[in-house]
Length: 261
Image 1 (tube, helix red, strand yellow):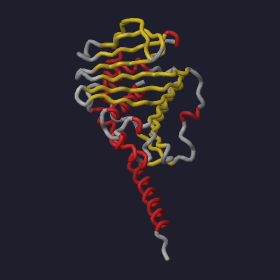
Image 2: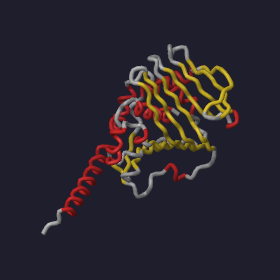
Image 3: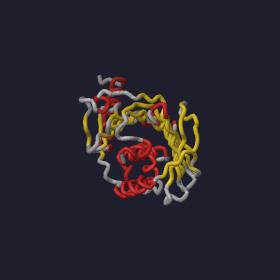
Image 4: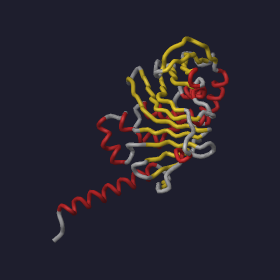
């Protein structure tokens, strides 16, 4: 469960103004420096169940009182402990970065996790992937477990969330000061959480919304990396290889325009 929360924390980092490259290569350090991370992860532990099997279109909205807000659309699939998230960075980065992302092969990113295995970060446009052990947030994991055990869930009201009838609950602990969270569960979908809103002590907010939820069995290939994709040691290697390929392509284009006599 704590591992799943880390994947959502990666998305929170992405939306916080960090570049895709920085987020993918230094997410552990960035997240570890966030005082909001333990409570956010603890709240998420109520949001996602190890035993649920479903697919959904989702959105993460992050509001910061200083820098404003940002939204990340994503796709998610879960099946008995396995998890996959599909993110399209070109949909939420600054327009000036879209062309650069595409040229680097970062226009699409898949995060695939199997219990007991490293996180796989897949770049479909490059047909490459890297493995990233989730080992940089031990302190957060411990505090997450402590806070998750102390979270109290209180019914607030019957409401509509993500387009479905839901029950709104408040999540809080006595040690989180100004931090609180609200979760909306849909009774008609086996109490599946469809929305989670987490307020932090600095006046910011993280809101996750799940739509078009399909609770069904999934093809195991959904959680696999295609056989023709190549593993690289780190994201830097991916960037270098893509850069060399782009350079070769540009040189070939120039050669065709100015053929030798």
